[in-house]
Image (cartoon, rainbow, N blue to C red; front, side):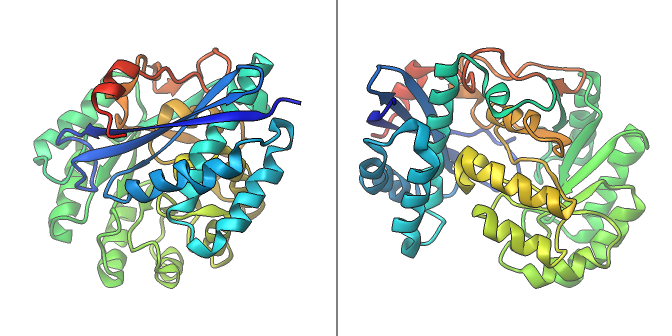
Length: 359
């Protein structure tokens, strides 16, 4: 039985341009993990931090998580995953689960590479391609004209769905901007709207009603992710789907939203929420409640997970890691096919990663 023999952690700080979403982040800390088993086979996994905290995750990866990972039997990895979860549970989830995610992704990459299968086929493919919505060409700082240009550029490339961002301006101005894009692209294009947790409940209720009138497909992160009751109130009254998940950690937090009928679109981020192992559990919970999945960021990884379950209608095009990849995901007519290489197939530009390395 193959056993994990070594774990190597590489920490790189990647600068971000101005057109990278609504968080206001100017850099992303990437923590790349390489596992080697006793037969010399390798697999890579990763996690990241946008707004600080990578030093804590890095310390866990180099210490406690690494100690638990070495010597693990690949064929019994879920048992070791659970042991790491149990032994670090008192530390909370926000630092531990990203560290565990990086190792878990590397394990699944290693296992599927040894099997000679792309990750989505190793997991059991439900389909060979996934629809993609365009998310990387709309920020709060852009003029309305630039938002329209970004939306049209996606449509020219064959996309059928786009995402806009609101919450940094007055609600009335945001609605005017969304309406202008809707008029420019027509009713046949799905528009998602991300609030980046910037609204209070009354503003979210007022805004949500008007977004529904504009045919918006979902309203994402309207409130702070800690406000479960507020999301439940909003979901029950605004008349459009509520999407959450990039700031939720683990299946229990997602299940709480579903029990309270506070969201119907879940957006787990595999490098933050527990890795592939936990994604599969979240997917099962979502299916039971009739919710859909649409993972956050990172299409090169998430295309495999989306193709492996029956209820993931979209992945998100967002160029977070493009600068450190040899090859980005190929998207044609708004649809992406997972790479046919064994494992997750992500090709890292190690020369750039080394140049940006912190440790």
